[in-house]
Length: 202
Image (cartoon, rainbow, N blue to C red):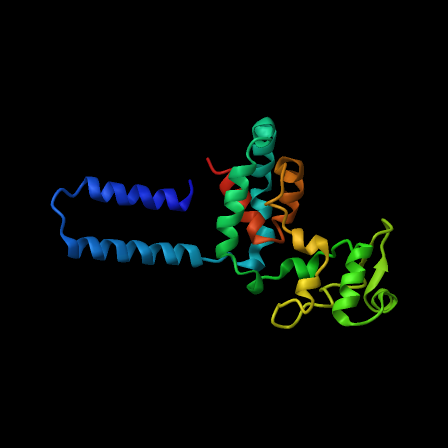
């Protein structure tokens, strides 16, 4: 259930069960609720343990897909709501797993944008940073990403590749089409891990 709905339910429960209002108690109640909510929202996943956590949930997630394949076709709004709520409390700069381990496919347009950001020629970008992989796709020569700074910021963020902009894909339309890919991504991205965990919760 959405956290905002849970909070509203708590408010109504409190009001309905207190006929005589003690405003001091009400103030303390809401302050405590705000504190608890803040602690919950700031709770972070241990990124080092993410592959192990995802592996433990793998069977549960796949079982959910088998049982709810048709239902998933109409769950985009629910998935996107989860994506937005979870993205707000996940600190990507504390993680950067995708930038360290996943080599994005680079398009010709990406090369042009990177070259413009670096104020150099596309041929220089190709020579210094890119290679053609076994699938005949352009990828970075090595990982972590050559544009990932020591503080986990991207040095070409505004000109980053399309694949980087779209990751982790949990806000895309027809999520059911990439559900199995998301199971794979859950071992890398805490947002995907949390989306799948909440989506498949009993």
